[in-house]
Amino acid sequence: EVQLVESGGGSVQSGGSLRLSCVASGYISGSFCMAWFRQIPEKEREGVAVIESEGSTSYTDSVKGRFIISQDNAKNTLYLQMNNLKPEDTAMYYCAADSRYCYYGGGYYEIKESDFDYWGQGTQVTVSS
Image: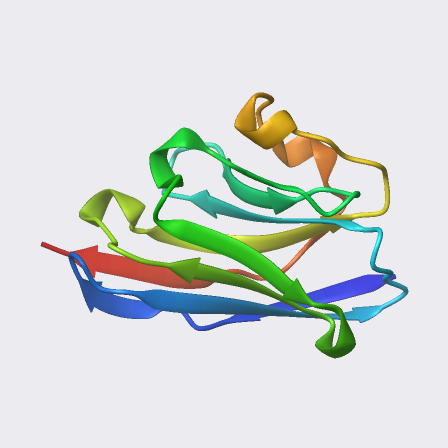
């Protein structure tokens, strides 16, 4: 079983930055597919960024050039550095993990909720204009 705990959310003004963290515990290895999703009320979860099984990263178009996903395997921690935040980035952000091989082609393929079995509880990000 894998447990994921997010932190780092908060309120920030447009143009500001936040760094989200996700600590993973349980049976997890460096080959796991790790991702960040976000969700606003009454909408489906949107895949934001992913570290693929072979270590490459992919991003949804709306965050390319502003968000950076990274991980520290020694600390079993996944990060999402969010820069130049916009009001439309306001959402609950979730960390997700899966043991299956994943490849998203640098953003060519959609990062789908159904691709991931393990989820954190979420951390709220609010960006004001």
